[in-house]
Image (cartoon, rainbow, N blue to C red; front, side, top):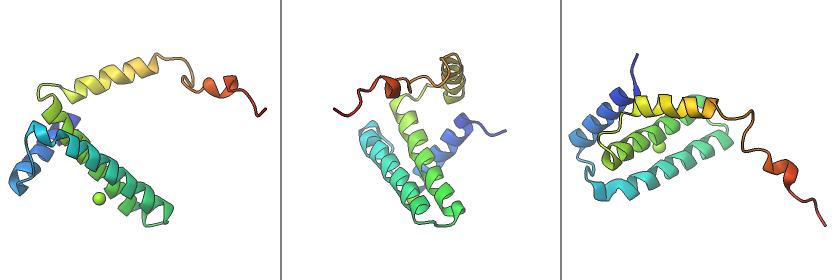
Length: 108
Ligand SMILES: [Mg+2]
């Protein structure tokens, strides 16, 4: 099964082959592009475009996230980090983070 680390290496291969920026000073741009692609996914969904198109935009987001991650921390093992973060989130209380809705004061 392909892993996040496999996907990250493939994105690196693409970046090098196509001559995209490949240095740490490109990190901010890549994170910005991830947001832009996320906006494209939202727009595609909102406009009722074919779901394959929306999914492709989400894959673009993943490309930029993986690309930024390898420049931010080349030694980070994303599969390991994913598992660790997954376990951390699984150990949180049910619907954690949504409690603020009950505590919000009502209209005056
Ligand atoms: Mg796109």
